[in-house]
Amino acid sequence: MSMMRFHGPAGQEDMPYLLTPGPLTTSRTVKLAMLADWGSRDVEFRKLVKEIRQELLQIAGCDDTYECVLMQGSGTFAIEAALGAFCPDKRKKTLVVANGAYGERAAQILTRINRPHERISKNDTTQLSAEHIIPTLQEDKNISHVWLIHCETTSGIVNPIGDLSRAAKSRGCIFMVDAMSSFGALDINMVRDGIDVLVSSSNKCIEGIPGFAYVLVRKNLLLLSQGHSHSVVLDLYDQWIGLEASGQFRFTPPTHALVAFRQALRELDEEGGTAARRKRYARNAEALVKGLAEIGIKPLLSDNASGPIIQTFLTPRDSHFKFDLFYEKLRQRGFAIYPGKLTQRDSFRIGTIGHLDEAVMLRAVAAIKDVLQEMNVKDFMPRDL
Image 1 (cartoon, helix red, strand yellow):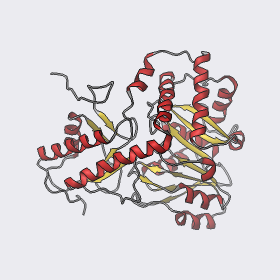
Image 2 (spheres, rainbow, N blue to C red):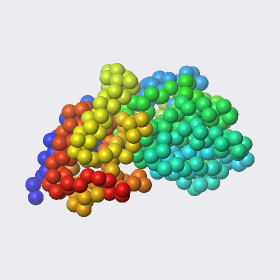
Image 3 (tube, rainbow, N blue to C red):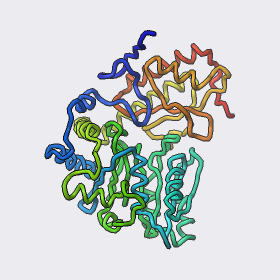
Image 4 (cartoon, one colour):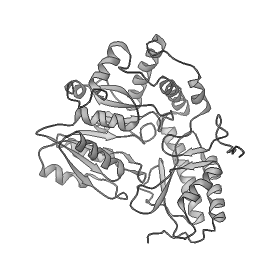
């Protein structure tokens, strides 16, 4: 069987573009940064780790009252680490506000680690607002922490963290944000927005590779978390103490991922920072949504709710449309999309972040049109109407 040629991005021409919100397509220079081996105790590597921590704080608009803690593993590792470090285990409670699968996962983690919490669940097309949380905060005086998702990649919906933060802070709550898919592109300033804790990972909008995540947190909360974690491995306080004392991780660090991330940070700066990246992603999203609209495929979200991170489209009701076949045929043409749905309505998702531009998105639209024609799909009305 001959090897398939995808004509993909620079540095991986024999593989497809990743149209997913992480892992995502990285630049050739980010890939090349991983061609050397680094010693975890070497002074050069410890200097690199320090630079990454400092630059993440700068990107987040933090002042000297914040700290950055790096944590091995996927973004969810750091989410559990943050929930275990900062959420109360008695007397007080955490309010989890969910409008998708990732908000629900946070509640699942709190249940597993036995931390008291309440949950507000909205459907995945409902953009959160202050009005959704104010009544609960007024009624339950034991709620001391609020946790929610900035960009919920179940659907791509973006929640207004500024408004939600003001509602939480006005009632004395600690405000915590899962910014996994938004940090590095969407407008975030932790001081301005009153964010006490923010979690994101290496393989999202900063365009690094998977391997570690990070928690940006007010230093006073970090100090108070000593001995509070439910885990040895995921103890943020102990991880921070190690990084501060020696510049080293407590356990083997993901050296190649960190070196690649340092290069990705340079490229973010060269592009013009988060504002420039946000504009490129917005152009990508516009090209994709407009192109599929011309075919007849409808987006799940309205323009004012969807962000530039991932776009969700309603599945055509045509009986010839089989998602698995659609996915594979599209991949054969050089584009790998999200391999499944999380939304309540029948849909599919396409990421618009990573090292790609409008030209790539237009090629993806052309490939989608070609696949649908080959599958003989003609009725594009949503399947579940």
